[in-house]
Image (cartoon, rainbow, N blue to C red):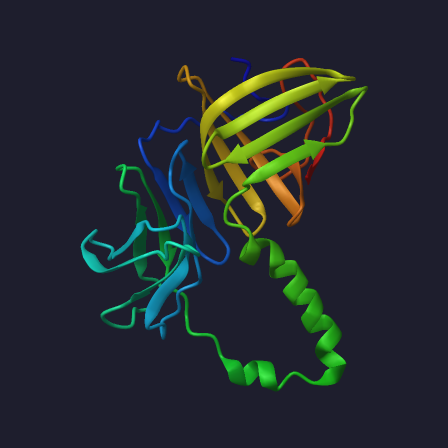
Length: 257
């Protein structure tokens, strides 16, 4: 397997091959491990005044909420028609508390996210915003869109062209990570059905750890400039020359297809 090469600074931090999916998610950070065949799971933000945990998962899977001691405190089942679920909490949770939310399928596969309980938002502050400040408020909301709407890089991302070459990354909870390079019409499947983890270092700065089928491991970093675009960077979040397979090194920008 030909692994991703970062041509600036040190990298390649390996992660262990897991038999199930795992994820950590807060407003500004998320850690996600995705194995092929894992059920899907999205979770709405949990606040200190929340009475339940809600979101959407694979249809019909069992949803289990565990506390920081990994003890189950509540459970429910995702709708068999929509996948939506609501799990009533036994009590309100303190700010900063970690909750483990699992989606477990009948075939034994499961996926979970570690959710950090956030401080209850204040509605009063929002109402006091004057019309003159509306423009700056909108700008702030736009800046936070990347962190609030993205918890995984799921989808197909195609890069800009460098010297006649381009790359394509496909992230999927069913098939894992697949990487391709294109030279004109000639396509090369560089990485096939690899497991990957997403470790968010900030709202839009993510570390991607990859384990190929044969066990080879690699790491790369991405910075989202919007919900539909990212660039490859180093561990210090600096744009660098990168290369996959035989593609020439360059500054590639990836766009969601």
